[in-house]
Image (cartoon, rainbow, N blue to C red; front, side, top):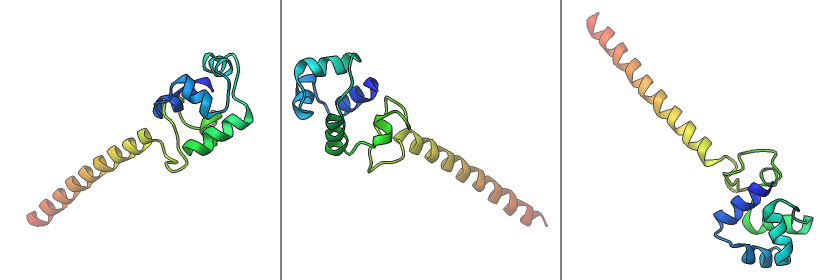
Length: 109
């Protein structure tokens, strides 16, 4: 979970001090959270989720990858979208080849 908290802070360009202020934590507590010694309080998780529109299942590790922040407004990770776009492009090329073959067969009849 620490990796995911750090990923959010990096994505939002927050340093440890700014994050502590936002999450209403002491500097010492934030330091322990960042090192993995402790975890955030329920209230701090709530602030993080609400403030940055973070998907709760992602922050708690149920879905997605730790290094790719998942937002509520973007329920599909960017890497998955890119993967699907690539598959679509490959299918379009394949379909184009099939149309060319069909046209060639019709010309030869």
